[in-house]
Image 1 (cartoon, rainbow, N blue to C red):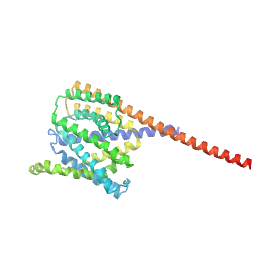
Image 2: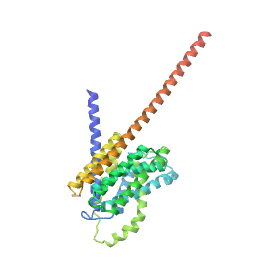
Image 3: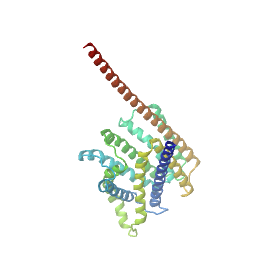
Length: 345
């Protein structure tokens, strides 16, 4: 009975983490849309908003790592930081800048549909960098996802070329960042969780964003003298952004990769429903058909990836078992030889 109660408690805890992550991810996306959209809060400064997030997250990450020591920092040399973290920070800055900019031009629902291209971008860039092997069946799956997104784009009622270009660039930069994390950090035995990632990457990201901010947004902000910094709006928005990273930290640590993927799918469909019902964005049947095709392609890709990981894990376990069995056999042979020699003596 105690075991079943423990299992139930573990399952309920996992679902709680998933619900918190979905809620915070949902809130950050809708909140960013609210701040940036001309029809809502009307503060169309995506670089400034991203810099506020990065400055806030850097400060809190520093407190958690260095002051309160709740999270252990990673051992990292100056050379490794410059060659590995800096390029990742630059890509993260570009990804966040363009993805936040897209909210000015596109609906929340359509942005979620375009984000379905992420596995396509990650796999394609992985093949280019020779991180992933080229497989014709996987590439066919990537084509099916792309076709689904293309159909969704064709059915978009308020299609904006500039907005789509910004979101596609954001996907490309984010995918490159994810591949480079594997090449520049994971391959060297360095693993960053969401908190240590913010501790190292967010300050770097903030510095990179300063350059386009000074050129693009600072002159406009100077002219709009009517603007006063709203600590409630931007403070709560930044808290939500940081809380989302904490939720990812909990979700990744306490659940599986499959749970994360399923939670992501649930969040996307909830956002599409919210965008249509509350924000009153137009979602056409062609939109939904296209996204459904892309969604099925992504689901199949995630399933295939999970099966491959399970097979690899089983292979490693089998090799360890064989090595252990071989070691025990050698020990027994050694003992038998020793006893035989003692008998002959």
